[in-house]
Image (tube, rainbow, N blue to C red; front, side, top):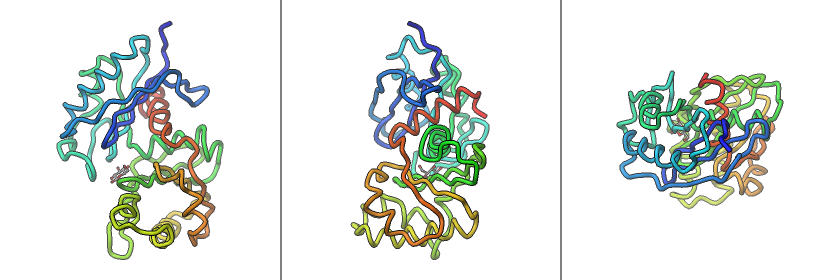
Length: 250
Ligand code: BGC
């Protein structure tokens, strides 16, 4: 049966994962497929993988949403903190639409996760200011107010104690420096306090792979804002990207 479900692609440092998404249910509408991320992961090399991935779903015909770990404005990638620098200035919507023959819309990875968590997940229906942060290689952020996303907030690059925040508080810093949960929680406290001071959010949601260990570190944070783990976990990127694409990328 031909499905007009939108399709979500999560472009990560090690894998490119995709699935059709049922946007009523907020879940995959079919099996998820994964292909290794090519090295170097230039836009052209990645575009070829997207075409291969989509060819595995001949019945899927809907719009395609793709997460990118950088600033995305009107389909153009404008930063590349943790990816190949050749992404900067690439009109990714155009490149991927040409490469795949599908309508493709690119969205910042944390913004996709934020949309998914507010629409279906941990902050479903929340009417205040919700800040979704993803703790991974970098720190991603999504600011959502009454369900509406303010894109490209890039709060992982706030300066905290004289450092680019993600260089000390991302999950990659915890792993690299072999920090205990307690040591990492101190850095996260400094980070979230800075965000609190600037934005006075009503709720923080914490995503990224490490959120499955949230019981180890969230109770150790000393901040004033409620902070809860994401619930869509590794589905958030795909589901959020598909949701974004279905609304025409804006
Ligand atoms: C990038 C963001 C991205 C985050 C998580 C940061 O380094 O600047 O755009 O959302 O990493 O991948």
